Amino acid sequence: MAVSDLAQTSKAGVSARSGHFDVAGLSMLAVVAVLLLAPLLAGGFLLYSLSLCFANALAVLSVSMLVRFGGEVSIGHSFFVALGAYAVAIVEHRLGLSIVVSLPLATLLGAGAGFVFAFPSRRLSGIYLAVATMALALALPEILIGFEKFTGGFEGLYIAQDLIPGIPKALQHYYVALAVLVLVCLALAHFRKSAQGLALLMAQAQPRAAEAMGITRSWARVSIFTLSAALAALAGALTGFASSTVSPNSFTFFSGVFLLVGSVVGLNRLSLPAALVGGAFITLVPTYLAQAGDWVPILYGVALVVVTLVANGGDLRRFLPRRVGR
Amino acid sequence: MSVAGFIRDILPLLWSGLISGCLYGVGALGLVMVFKSSRVVNFSHGNLACLGAFVVYGFSSGSLLSLSWGSAVALALGIACTVAVISYVLISPIVFKSDLASTIATLGVGLILQGAVQLIFGADIVNLDLPVPRYSFSLGAIRISSYDLAVLAVTLAIVGGLFVIIERTRLGVAFRAVSTNPFACEVCGLNLRSVHLFSWLAGAVLGLVAALLIVPTTFLSSTTVPSFMLQAFTAAVVGGFSSLPGAAVGGILVGVAMNLFSFYVAPEFMNSFLLGVILLTLNFFPNGLLERAIVGRV
Image (cartoon, rainbow over all chains, first blue to last red; front, side, top):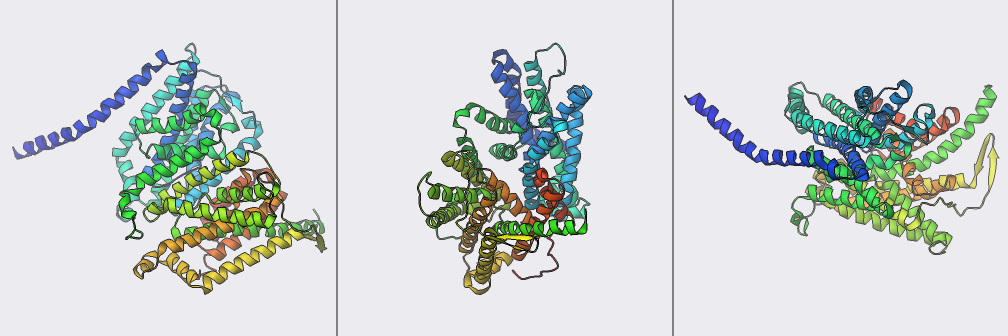
């Protein structure tokens, strides 16, 4: 009797809590439904921008994931995005295969590169990783231009193959990007509750307790960076597919910083709306404010500072005079 | 390659590596001072130095005003210090709460400065020389120019001045105390904010000096100085990121290594080489190359 009572109450508790959750779930479904139907109304250019938004949202998610689970910041995720995009282009040029093959391949390559990159700083605090990612972002353009034989140099490469022949290209780009984004969001929500996800969170929040349970900090660091880089490469593959072209112009030093801006604007959340807000911010602002070119970095900088201050500042009254510091 | 030819090549390479390395070291000192006192990696360092260098250009070349070089530099120092104070004040609410968030905020400041430079000075590529007479003499295989001597003199003066301040003045004692144990300092009634401000100002000055001295060897544009700061970051990592002598020595090592790499391997993969240096250092010498050589001090 008592046991079933207990089960009943705990079940009630869960549904009471998830009742709160259901609103979020329902609004999420509404967002997805609107996005699914958008191609009926939207024109070609908007559809193209939205596809890029989805791809960038995924890249933003990869940075947010690193911040959330690893407590690290990266300004060099553009490297892994570029890796994914060029993987798609090069697989098509050299082997003549479509993204059926290159999407998983890009993700694997991203994971491998992420592991190699994160391994050296496994024992150090996050700032060393941040500095190393800065070098990564700055090294990217010269690598893309230097290996002209594979990457096409300044001109870049075109990506022409369809996933499913016969369906209009714009629709394919749009729906593939949307589908991958939604799937990744679901997977991340699942990962958050999985044993692996909890282990990573624990290694970040309570390193000593985690070590006592056999989860070492360096293992957590390397594995979260590997996952995040794989996600970034997947996003890059989608970016390449959606824009039908890759070139060094889209991967300057600042594209890595902008990914971080997108992540911060989405408050480093891992949900679909946050990712969409971040992705839209870094995709649509440069597109629609093209005449205001030089104002874009200023706008991004202001957004970065303001959001960081508001999110971390807490109650600002504590910083009035009479109390210094802390 | 003959031995004599090798020696003829290597001496000038080492010499010019030493000269540019001094400047990377000066840039790195600014980063390390800010990091040691406030635990923030200042990603706006390069952008601020770039703004300062452009101010010197704008006020001395006639594009905004045509002042003498000296007064333009004084003006640029004033502007750089003001911006440094403003950016510290901006992040001061979160500087004790989260290293990561404050570091992200400095990136935001860097973006704003970058945009400001592009807005005011455009995307032009300009030349900005030092006002030193052109003069050079040979010493064996090495050719020493007046520019080299100016760089050495300024570096020695700056590093010496910094050393005196940190070793001999009350401010320096406070700086060392704060970088060792901020909590104990606060308990003793030391104002952490003023020490932080000192290091941010020193960082701005060091960055500007390094930028003004490095620009004559290349050119000035809205991207060269920020990417030059990658050398400073690498120097700081090689030196361990929290050791001032380490930063200076790291700068010289990086300067020499870069020169050798670009001469013997591939000049177009400079940044990739620096990335490799950073990753190898982090893997094999996580606390910097000088970890054992210097224990305790500064």
